[in-house]
Each structure stands twice: as structure tokens, then as C-alpha cells.
Amino acid sequence: MLSRITSARESGPLINMPEEVWAETGSGWVQLKPGGDSSFTGNDIEVSLKSNGNSLGVYIQSAKTALTGVRLKWKYEAKPAVKTLGDHWERTYGDAAWKTPNAATKNAWYVLLHDDRQTACFGVKTGCSAICWWTVNPGSLELTLDTHSGGVGVELGERKLHAADIITSESTSSENTFATARRFCKLMCEKQRLPKQPVYGINDWYYAYGNNSPKLIKEQTSLMAALVTDTNNRPFSVIDAGWAAYSPLLPGDCCWADDFSRPNDKFKDMHKMAGDIVGLGMRPGLWTRPLCAKYNDRPSVLAPPIKGRDEPKNPVLDPTIPENIERVKNNIAIYRQWGFEMVKHDFSTYDITGRWGFDMDTSITQPGWSFNDKSKTNAEIINHLYHSIREAAGDIYLIGCNTMSHLSAGIFELNRIGDDTSGKEWARTRKMGVNTLGFRMPQHNIFYAADGDCVGLTSQVPWEKNKQWVQLLAESSAPLFISAQPDALGAEQKAYIKECFAKAAKVQPIAEPLDWLDNPLPAKWKLNNREVDFDWS
Image (tube, rainbow, N blue to C red):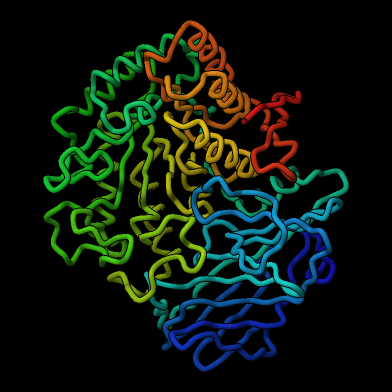
């Protein structure tokens, strides 16, 4: 499947020079002319390509013209009956699956093509400086590198942008598709940062939904700590939204705080709260929203209001302004000082773009607006935010939630890979949890530890359904977090959680969805070297 589009090399196949290269400016798309040195030019725009070991580097210059994107096109005819699998920008939304090729589908970051005998892989390495997607068209394969800054073209000036490194691979005779996908993820993510031990524990969100308190956290931690048997790898107790100082414009709004450097009147002393969790036998974790601005911040530090981000009561910090990055870093440093050992940071993709991943089908963000600094691409702006959070966090664990997956890889130890599960609706957990775990397990313990989200163990969700979700997480080697309503914990539930905590605390084989080629809700899994059937109905 690769022979017509790649050249054989000792380090693996390298994709050939594209037949066409296009650039997008405010005037639309224009085709660039090929030069004799692996470059393509038009006006002041130049796209050059060069071999970087096992990848093809894409470099972009545009001294005067604001550039919104570059597109590379190769002649390529996918075999009949081929199926494709792409990634998502940030989280999945219950719609990941092997699908028939569709020219309208943007396969974020990478695309796999499988024809029942062979799997071909096309992607870009993690940490790239453009937001990239692949499209499989009749007769061609295209890679688009989005270079917007906010909703306008990036102004590179004299700078040469190393936009991305393209990498390809194909299955070997000894691999199934899942094994090929995992190996390809390792090729895309060369520098890994993973937890030192498997991560598991509890989170209050899916029964408290922001109505938490120190009393609730301590009672829940004490109750669940009694079910822990592995004292060499203690679980985390993550305090979710609801602890920070409320905005006077939104009193009681758990997901929008005025100041994430100080607690609200319910919590008062977060250093004591972290210490109480440790004393009860768990490791303290904390949720935050890094780009929340204060209600009275001066307008000059705020990102401009755009559709999806235009509620005046919810001002957002402009991440291209250095003092805002310092505020974010200061907050993370404060959590370390309080004694928290893991921080879950949320909402940054939405707060930057004004869109959720499922709304990015036409464009990543609303057109026509800009940050304070227009010289960096959105990917570079996001990368800088992530690296700043990482720097401030030091050796504590980070969970990215609503973060760009390919830009999170190798930076955060964990990543929330799907949209919210539920403590109210089993159908939502099945859709968001089972689907995302099935199709992002190839990334697990390569990009990051893949967090499929919590078990919302409440009286509103049938235990016979949740029990299966607990089992899959506990035996998958992925993080297991349980959000348990005390009234829903009977003797049977406690005994099973105790058993599953013991499993989740230890290193296990990576779970493999055996029917993922045909089933968007994989029901047949290989867990600990045995086949397990689930009923997700």
C-alpha cells in the first residue's frame, strides 16, 4: 500500500516529494511552483522539504504574507474496500471508528488505512508547530498544515517555521492492525513522559458535580481508602471543580472561578486539605482551569470575544501575553506548595479556540480574530502553554483534559482521551468511555497514560453495567478512576472495587480491542492474555 508513495530506507519508508504544494492566504489557495532543491515557491512564500532521519521535515517561510495554511498532495489510490482510522484534535466524542474513506473527513494528526491484509500509516510527529490533518481522496492523499494564529494568518516575518515532520510506516507480516498502530504511535512520539507507576484512584465529579466540600472529600477518601491493599502504589484522590474562589459575577459556578490560586469559603485551607488526603492513605490531586481570567482583569490581557467565547462573565486570558503565562505557572506552583501530587488542567482548547473538537470540522476556530501576538501559530501558542505548565509542575503528575492530543504527548503523564462519561446515564459512559478507550489504546503508555474517564458509580446507573466498565479499566493497564456515591456502595460493590484497585495498582499487559475493525463499541477484549466478552447494551 505504500510502495507508490514512499521510498524504501533502512530506517523505514520515507514519503516521497508531493506532486503538488499549495499555500493559503487571505486571498485563498494558490499552487506553489516546484524548484530544483525540494522546495516550492510562490511570491514570498516558500515550502521546503528535507529528510530528517526517518521523517520528511516541512519548513515554511512567508516573510510578508500572512499565511493560514499549507497543503501537500500526493497521487495515491487507496485499495477497494479499504477502511481508515484517524485521530481527533483533542478528546474523542464517541465517534471514533474504522470508516470508509471520505474526502470530507479530516483525520487529525494521522491516518491508518487497512485493507484486511495490510495497514499503511501516515502521520506527523508529536509536538509539531502546525495543526495537521490528512484527507484520503479518490486518487490522492493530502496533508494540510494549519498555520492560523487565532483566526488569521500567522505573520512569520523572517522566521522559518519547522511546521511538522511527516512519518510513515506499514504493517509487518507478524503484526495485526492494533500492533501496527501502537508501533506507529511510538514512531510519532519519540520522547515519552509516563507515570512511574500505574495511576488509579477516585474523583468526586460524577456524584458531586461541583457541589463538593472538604467534608465530602474526606468522607469519600476515607471510605475508598479502606478498599486499598497495595501500599507501594497508593491511589489518588482528585478534588474536581468546586474548590476555587468564585467569581462575584458567577457565584457558585464550579467550572468558572475568579481566582484559581486560592480556595473558596468552603475549602479555606488547601494545604490542610492535601495533608488530610495523605493522612487518609491516598495521594492528593486537584482540578484547575488555567486560562480563566478574573472578573476585573484589564481588557488588555484578555483574549478577544468570539463566537463560542463571548460571554462577558467568562473572560479568558490571552496565552500569548507573557504575564498571563506567568500567572498560569504561578498557580501550578502554588498547587505544588500546597502538597498536591497531581494536577488535572481542563478547558484550554475550548478557551483558546472557542470550540470543542467536534465543532472543528470546517475550521479550528472562528475566522477573523487574533491574539496579541500574531507571529506564532496556534500550535506554537498551545505548545508554549503546555510546556509552561510542565515547567511549573516539576515532578508532579499532570492530566491534560480538553488538550490537543498530539501536542500533549510526551508533555503530560496522563491525558483524558474522551468526552465526559456519566454518573447519570449509562448510554453516555458507553458512548464516550468504551468508544474512546477502544480507539485510543494504541496511544496508551506511548503518548501518555490514556485516561478513559471515571466510573460514575451511582444509584442512577445499573451496577451490572458499571461493573463491566470498572473491569475493563482495571484490567486494561489504563488509569482507573472511580467517582462513587456512598449510598451506591454496598458489600458487593466494595468487594469488587477492592479487587479492581489491587489489579489497577500493578503493571499489566496493554488491553487490546479484538473487534475494533468492525465494532465502534468493542465488546471483545484481550485482557491479561485472555479473551473477555462484554455486553455494552
